[in-house]
Every structure is written in C-alpha cells, then in structure tokens.
Image (cartoon, helix red, strand yellow):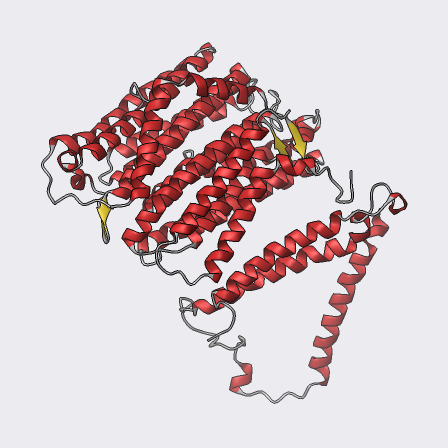
Length: 493
Length: 129
C-alpha cells in the first residue's frame, strides 16, 4: 500500500484497459478540436497504434500469475488475456475496413474511432471482470458505444432503425442483468464472483438466487444473440454500417462469451446450482440446439447476403454454446476449443462482412444474392477470398472454421451424454453448407446482371487479405493457437 | 437497527406534512373565482388534450443527455463527499497515514466527465441556437 491506496504494479497489469480507455478519450478530443472534415486517416492510424500498444501490454502480462487487481474488481489471467487479444484483433480489422467504407458511403466522422476504442475498453472490462459490478459496467460501456456505432450512418434510415431496435432490446437486457445482480447480492451478500462461488446451502438453494443467476444468464444470452433472445440481431446486423456489423458480430460475441465462461467457471460453478444434476448443462443444451437450428434454417431463406451472414452468426453462437455445455460435463479442458473457435470465428466473420462492405459503391450497396452473380469474373481474388471465408464459416477444410468445429466436437465427444447435441450440431453444419454455397454458386456460376463495382481502398484490401490469410493459416497450422488456447483455458482465476 | 432508519421516517413525514400543509392552506385560504380556463386540466406549457404523437425538437433530447452528465456527477459526488474521510485514510484509521485514493479516484472520474463536456462544447451542443 502507498499513498494511492493500491499497489501501483497493478496499473501495469491493467495497462491494456487503461491504454484503450485513455486512447478513446484522446481520440474524441482530437476529433472535437480538429478542423479536419475529410478522411480521418490520422485517427485510424492512431487507433491502430493504441490497439497495438494494448496488445503488447497483453502479451507482456501473459506470463504474470493469475491475480485479482483493484480491490478484486478485475482479474488478470491468461483466459482474459487470450479473449482480450482476440477483441483487439477484431477491433483492429474493423478499423481497417471502416475508413474506405465511410469515405465511399460519404458519412465520414472521426468519432467512429473513439467509439470503437471505448467499446473495446468496455469489452476488456467485461472479460476481465471479477465482480458483478465491473461486469455490468463493462457490458454497458460496450453496449452504449456499439448502439451509437450502429446508428452512426445518419442518412441511412435502416441504420437508425437498427440502432433503435438494438438499443431497446439491449436496454431490456441490461435491466434484467442489474435485476439479476440485485437478487444474487440480496441472497449472497456479495457481488464478488469468487465470493458468490464460495456460497453454501441454504443460500445457493434459495429460489431467489436461482432466479438471479438465470436473469444474469439471460442478459448475456441477449448479448451473444442466442435463440430465443436473438430477435434484434438480424435487423441490427443488417442495418448497421457493414464495418460496424463486422465489429459487432465478432467482438461483442467474443466478449459476451468471455463473461459467460467466467461466470460459469467462478460464481455459478457449483453443479448443484441450477436445474438437474449437471448444473446449467440441460439449459445450455436446449439453447444451443435452438440457436443453431433457427440460425441455420432462417439463413436458408435469405436473399440478402448481409442478412444471411447475420443469421449465420447466430448459428455460430449455437455451436459455441455446445462448447459451454461440454464445459459443464468435461471440465476446464473444454474451454480450449471454445477459445480456438472464437479466434477462428473472429477472423472469418470480420473477413466475410468485410467483403460485403467492400462490394458495392456509394448509394448502391450490393447485398442481394443476385448482385453477387458474376463476381468471380470481375474480381477473381475477391471471389476466392469470399469462398474461402464462407467455407470456413461452413466448417470445410482446410480452413480455421473446420479445425475449430473438429476440435470442439472432438473434445465434446469426451462425454457420451453430449452425443445427441453433437449430432444436431453436425447436421446443422451440413445445412449451413447449402446456403454458403448459394453465395459461391452465384459468384462463380451465374452471369452478372449489373456491372460489378467495388470500394477502392488500400486499408480495406489489406484488412481483407489479413483476415483471409489468417483464416487459412489458422486452418493449416492450428497447433500454436491450440497451445495458447489450452494454456489460457487452464489459467482461470 | 430500526433506530438507524428513523431519519428516513422523519424525512418522509416532514415531506408529507409540508406538502399537505401547502395544499390545505391553498384550499382554505385561497380565493376561488372559477373560470373555464382555470378549470381545464393543467399541463405546463402545452395543450393538455391532443395526439400524443407530436414531434419534439431534437434539442430537448440533447439537453436531457447533457443533463445526464452533470446528474451522474452529483449522484457520485455526494456519497463520495460523505465518505471522503474514510477514503483518505490508510486503513484502519487516519492515524497511520493519509491516502490520496479518494481524491485521485474522483479526479479521474471528473476528468472523464469533463472530456464529455468539452466534446459537447466543441460540437456546439450547448446553447439553443
């Protein structure tokens, strides 16, 4: 203890969060006090520098022992570091996409970069939260910034509609979360995750405690867009400016899963807690089946590629929930595949939404499936990248998506009780290949109806190449990331 | 334990008493000259009866959101000021030393809010013009 009332070494551990938050505020001021009304290339570059510094700080804290900091408000462990790095990568790629898209669609505004950083700081708080209060603050910081980003395309009515719907549903979810926290606190007398995890009967058998835990769980289910709490997602994903959709679909989901996995590993880890003898497993299994099936079946009928990808992202939350169910039956080693899957999903999602953003010009976004006809002739490289990313989403080798599913299902098979769930997941993967291939056939085997136009932007091109090569590289050489994910999965405080 | 809440009860009773005193005083002492206008339902500054779907100027929302910045500031400053002595001590008592914890924490908080205010100012969100 010193004059500041806490060990300043903790600031070093919280460095990623501090860098991103301060960076967000500085960028906001730079935008407010500059006269630049054209492209904000300098702000984009600065954002990437801030995200890079935060990533470096994360890498430095990798070898630190897992510990709670700031009066047990945050926790630094390899698990949060892994997801934190993923979030930074997702945010960086979204920033890379945004400049070109905003210039092309003529709604340039520098606050975009500040908002991405503020949302990122919320996500980092969410995955590092060691207390229900910091969890709530993280979730709100993230959500409020993302609502604004969703509605940031002000001249586009769909963008405003998306923001409104997302905000209303999100506010409802936040209310549920805070209500759940209040109930859990009322019974257990603490908001600290570890302290809640250490509660004994009669507290944990109290129905009020169960309802509180359920409310918290439902609030997170809203954020990861699990069926039946998904209804905002297709509209919000479709209406948001496409780089924001990429950002939302990848990082918000990663942060939500980070918080969910920490909650089931700490506060609500007791098997006798919820329904049945295996804790939350039956509940999560039902949610997983509903999410996968509805996501995939609804995606079958979509005529807009962007909306199709939105439903596909719902389905992916379902596959990830299979991993959460496996966690309950198999134990911490099931966390590794979830982390790997999240990494693969982040790259692939940002990449595929990135190509949607890249396709089309001002006032003429090419979302409908017919518009994608003939892309392969006009832009062989773009069509090839999209094909690869879609194959990854569908889980076909040699991509990251394939290895992610393979690894997840293989570990989940460790428990025979999960076999039906895995069969449903595999059947769903097969269904999903059908609609992914619809886009591929449109690109390769149909004549173009209108001349193909794309956004010309170096930042976008570089970002898309990074995402595509990343997806391929993770599929071909998954070993190192599996090692990191395994390490991360075993260091949860 | 119950005695801790006595001030709350007194505050509630005082509030109720004051409000009823004003109402009773107005009812008994005030002159009554009714007219159609005076008997109409009262709503400050607008027509009391009409469609609820009227369009409001976006400026109202702007002011409301700006108000939030200051409102949250005061909501946190009050409990902070009440607990300032405890926040400034190195536990368990102030005899063992003084800590800057409370001061620095609030400074960081206010600084973030000032950033929001500076942004609103630069973007000309303050003012009605």
